[in-house]
Length: 462
Image (tube, rainbow, N blue to C red; front, side, top):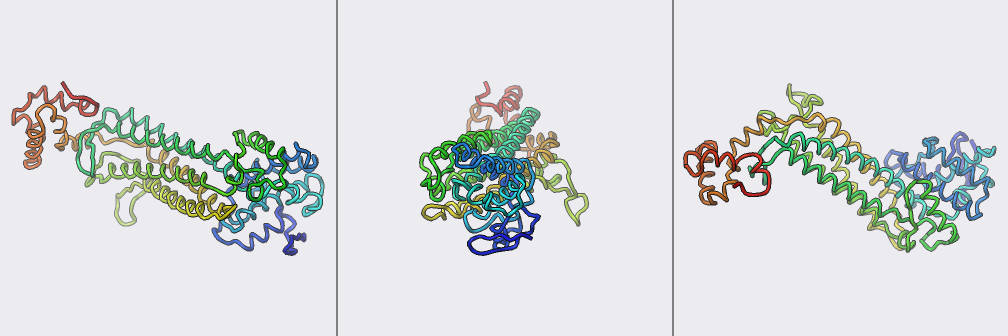
């Protein structure tokens, strides 16, 4: 054990760990989720700390030997090392101070090792004086959230792009599968299964654009604002430089906010990101439920789609297979919607110069991105790729429907069309048979009007 102290007092810290006294206090104080910090977030914080060290070295404030050791330690974390040294609970009081100090202590103790000194020699390399130089939790923590969201968003939008691309393939593959369209869960007019798949793809691509736009907007940061955005203890040269170094470290463009007090006070940009995910989740739920309905049955439902059989569906009913992949996409998206409410409550609950609720915002946004990414990839891999249409059933429903009578309106008028529909309903006869019996159209004209192309494209059959 080694002894470390802060202004509250002294604690013993296991000598093998790289974190220190303030992390130990956080471990003792916060037993909330049973989880630790998201590894992507840990690596994002390390990137921000590396950028800060580079900027402080450039201005001459940070000793080169110390700065280079801190950067080497940060690089190790960015490369995936020492991730087990971040044991604090992600939901915590203190606006993220415990997470920030956990990183500062790990960086310093590893940097001390690098220069040949024992852990805990904070008189040589200090978590507060060196790793946190020209910073506060209040600027480095939200900036790290933004870096992490940008990283995770790439995975999410890549998954959504896979989904849209596969739907577009199905749109082309199923372009000749004519089926009954439905509104109000009632028969409407014909549509092709390919058109439906194309519609889902279009909505998913809109979600990608929505998420990308929201994430792009949070590339404005408050690094250098320190405690309340006024820039206390941060030199103007550092404030300018840290935007450049963070852009260099992340490979993305980050810019300093025009009003750093606003950027420190307000977290509405996080609400935009969360809301973009929530809205996209709503689109995915609608799509998944359409798939469930079209696959319902198979003998007593619509049975228009054949979903891949992934597991037995019942512990008591032999032969039952459930649409489990569509169901898990639904449930993952429900969680995203619930997370968005938590983010919304946290965003509105910042008082005066800081929103101290950022830890719960980060926790929920990171989870939302992870859940949605995994669920979308699962939907593509386990359902969509192996999806097959039931062409015979689609045609059967179409043949039994009177919805096709709508196509006759320009040719025989509403009253005659309504009369045909009523008789077909009352007698159970196919609509084509009723048309022929009434002699309102020639067979050739009827087949032309009711052809798949004429009924699923704009215009009036001539």
